Structure formats: structure tokens, C-alpha cells
Length: 493
Image 1 (cartoon, helix red, strand yellow):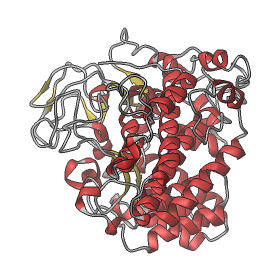
Image 2 (cartoon, helix red, strand yellow):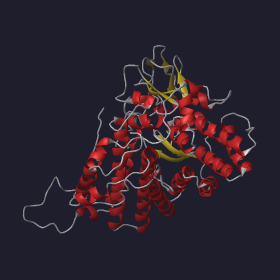
Image 3 (cartoon, helix red, strand yellow):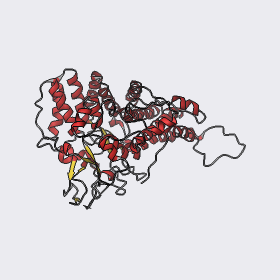
Image 4 (cartoon, one colour):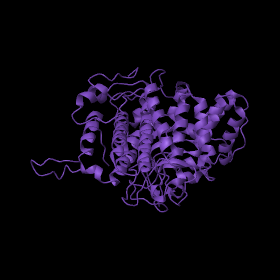
């Protein structure tokens, strides 16, 4: 298991330098002038620029242990888990909100996502230089803009205002990069995200237009879905509802009838999927390293993969499900349980509950090892679009269509129609539904913050949440030092 803690300023510069000099390992003869960079003579290289944007999503720092610490363990849905003495570097700090500017997870999420931003900037800048079909060129730029928006959406939710790095700097522009490494406002970052997604919507094809070889690439529906979510975070309810309804009315997506199947390989990129991080590539035989392993049961697992035992469901989440809600058994598995593939969780495992959505079958699914499983990570799906539409409609006073969309989600869960009638009651019902529908999909902490009740909920859960501080995480100290003090720390840190 390798960890890469990278300083973002040098990274942005180095990526810029080397990405334009693909033949640096085979230099030209001495004193011979190179007339043209051969990179742009091969049309297939355009796609490689964009593929690099996707590949960063599988990185440890973007989607695995550090991200679980920031987005999940910090919330009331998850405990640190594992053995008491195994802290996972800092997951105890993430759990009890004692983290600070030098905490590893917080530093890694920053660096990992900014590397993704840097790769997207490279793709957006370089793809137009290729002599390829214009439609293909537009699509590739649209994919890169969708992915840049996704990386920035993580950054702005985690840290608040962050540096707006939206162009490529050459290797001799260190001073220009340093001057740009200051905090932009949250609104400025959200404006960039909205601009990128709007452009992506105009450039990307529908999901049904892709060939099998391109399944998993960003689509128009994915861009619309992410934009609906972004507008929800900004409380721009009319635009959020319009985007979510565009996805719902497209006829391309629908609820997977069996909720438990959403996280199986058999339904990857299926009817409910707007966007997933791809866990396997038949040509490369790779996976999302340790995503399943760090959340798998710690102890004896007969006939299946065990793991590190982190990011475990809390008793509070376990109790949040209504009687008869089938989502509970699809989200949480327990000590002593026999799982869907016949694997048996031993009575000696370290924790009473584990995250079923992250489980990867050793016997019934394609994996490369216990560490390198082929499991996709679901990022955007149709069930959430229904809940976004429900919340936006309710905030606009449209309680009837709001309840209708909420009830579609509840019906799939095996529950009856909501009894909420007033706008306030319906709002609370939708918020509760988001929790149980989207548990362990890395939204709970940020949902509580945007709903304005993070302090109330967290303190009731026993966490020392400080209003005006813990709504965002600290800016990593190393980034402040690199910026020569230009980056200002978040309040309270």
C-alpha cells in the first residue's frame, strides 16, 4: 500500500512541463532543433489527456481512505471502526473532530483533488490542439470540464473558498502560479463549477449514445445531475428542480428495482447510474485500491475478503431506518452474518457493523486481489435525483410533486407513502430520506452543513462540533507555507 502526499504547486508545474514533452526519456540528438511536439500528431493522444483526468478519481487521496475520513467518519453515520489501537493515521481525529491543519487525511484530500484539477486543465488546454473530429474534440473537452467541476465540488464543500486554478501554467511561470495561489471566494468557485457543467451539458452525449467501449464516461445526464446537486447546495431551488427534472424526464434513467443490487458489479453503469468511478479496465486489469479493503470486516471472514474494518455504521444510523425498510439490510452487515455470496462474517470481527455498499465479493465478482477489487464507486444516481427534485419542489412550495418523488424512493424501499403534509414536515421527511437512501455515499456531513443543522445533530451524537468552525475543514498547513502565507486559514483553526 503506497501513499503519496504531494505538494500541489510543484505538481501543477511539473505536470505542465512533462505532459507536453512525452519523449523526454528519448531525447533528440544534441544540437538538433525539435520543430514540433509529436504529442499532437497522434489523434489518440487527445483521449489520453482526458483519461488521465478519470484515473485520478481512483487515487487513494481522492476516493479511498482519506476521503472516507473526511466525508463519512466525521459524520454521525460512521465510526472510526477497526481495533481501538489502530488509528488509521488520523481516523480517530476525524471521528472526534479533533483534526487540525496538519492532519494527513485533510492534506491528502486537498492534494489529490488539485492534481485532478491540474489534469483537467491540461486536457481542456491541449485537446483543442489536435486535428481530430470536432464532435469528438468537443466531447472530450466536455468530459474534462465535468470532471474539473466534480473535483472542485469536493474542494469547495470540504474547505470553503479555495484557489481558483483554471488554466495551465508553463514550467517557467512559477511566479505566476504563486501569485494565483490565493483563496477565491466560495461563490467564485461555484461560478466556475456552474460554468463548467453548463458547457459540459452542451458538449456531452446522452448515455445511450455511447458505445460499450466508452461506457462510464461522463454524459449529459451526469452533468445535469451534478448541476442539480450544485444548485441545491446554493439553495437555487428553481434551477435545481429544472436540472433534476431534465434527468428524470429524459427516459434514460430509472430506479433499480432491487435496492441491494445497486452496489453489485452486475448492475454497474446500469439503469440507475448517472456517473460511477470505474473500478476495472479489461485492458489494464486495475481497480480502486483499498476502497473495499479499508471498509471490510476486520477479523475472520470465511469464503470472502476481510479488511481493515474502518468507516463502520453507527448505532444511530442503524436505528434511523423505519421498520420494514429494505435499505437497512443492503447498507449494513453484521458480526456473525452470512452475506449474499455465502461469505460468513466471524463472531470475532472487531466491530458489530460494517458498510455493505463497499463490500466486494471474492467468489462472485471480478477482483484482482483483496486490495485491488474491481468495484465501481457510485457518485451520482437516479434515486438521488428524485430526492433533489423533491427537496427543490418543496422549498418552492410545490408540496404535491415533492411528495410524489419522495414516495417513489420510499416505495422502492418497501415503505408506504409519507405522512408529511406541511412544507416543514415534508422538508424533515426528505432530509431523513436522504440519510437512509444515501448512507455511506459520502454526503451526510455536507448535507448537515448545508441544511444548517450540523452542530445540533453532531452535538446530540456526542461530537464536539463548534459552530462557525467545523462547517469546513482546515486549509492544510503545508499549503499555507507553500503559498508564503497568502492562503488564509479557516476560522477556528
